[in-house]
Image: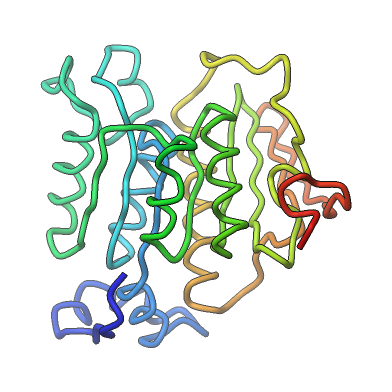
Length: 251
């Protein structure tokens, strides 16, 4: 992360004019976004929308981690992937699509998923994490480093027509291990999914990140937003730290 502060250019003023009209955000909020770096784990159905919206909003740097080659079954929801890229690394398609939208943003892309072996290094590069990974091994690795390195983490997930999201602020809120001390035994890698559900929760995650970075509005700190699009029920509940949490309980 660079210590040199970047100021808004005339081009920035033109591109982000409409969002700078948002009360409490303004030019100062946009400048904070330009100087921010965010890690997005996986850039598929959920993370792809997150990365695209962050690029559109003018975040200065994205660190992206996504392994594997594009398959036909990805195309119903992974909006940064295109048919002509089948069989090729997903991360290359991600970089290409993001640069088409925002050629001025810095992108540091890795063709690997987050793991215990690389999480420390990846988290050290950013100001905030948005967790879009489907596997708890990845999510736990990011959560551990978020706590250790005091890095805010927007934690989001979806299944079928349901989604949930919370914002983790180390030393202030429950961490992921408070909520899930162990991997849920029923969780499977493949699950029913609509791209629109991923996109919806991804957009909410981006707004959480923008509010944290720019310092305005209310976030989901110590709260969990549960969404069921089958019944169109939205519920926000309070969540609390676990005193015996093996990750953050000692803080």
